[in-house]
Image (cartoon, rainbow, N blue to C red; front, side):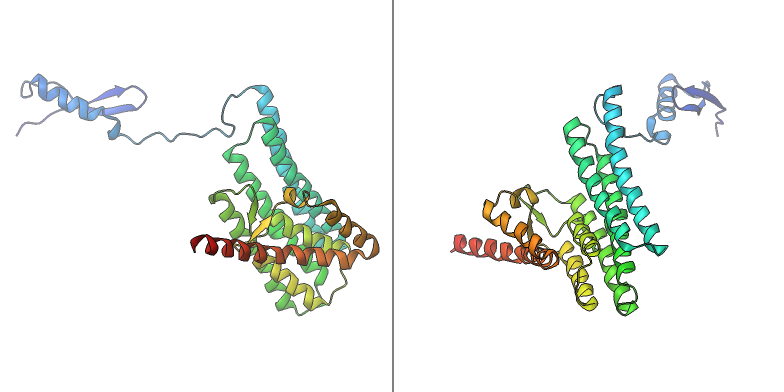
Length: 285
């Protein structure tokens, strides 16, 4: 048996590898095959690659704009955490509701600035989703819990608030992996649900507590439904008289008008779905 002494060969970018010294028992062709196998990239673990947070040109101007967008996202997250801390320390729930409305403002601002500055990125999408989960999936139900605690049975209230958190997580995950429709939302957006909950607390919606809990559960279910809901841009394109009616209603009775608007929006999803289904059936016939 021929013993082959093994030495150490430095391979560029990969450190030291084992390779045999030339011996009389090995011809030149065999030596080349052994050295080629020893220095092959497959013989060492691949170096992990790092994906840049900001794709494209890395100029100082783009970095500043990118940082500004992420600052808006983090501001929304911090305000959501503030709402949670205020709720658990017994502060007036309306203060937490105001924090939630501020969260919604920053959440809309970060996306608008990212598109305007041309610094949208996969990292920004994930940051926005995590911020939304904190502010709208956790802070919003915590604020609602603090507003209704002691007015309804605790197990019922805990279950309703937990449903909001679970449905928000499902919706955000589904949104990240689903194709986007420029005309409609698939289900009620988390921002819309959080807005409804925050305004309900802020105006002190005078509904029986049990009915409030039912409303919270309906909002949670609507978030994960497949019903199409119109985006606000489409709502504002409605005839002027349709927009004036709710304004007059708010002046006359804020709470009643707000409740009717929310109810109309929730019902609009099933109506649009039924109309689309009927149209498809007519085309098929």
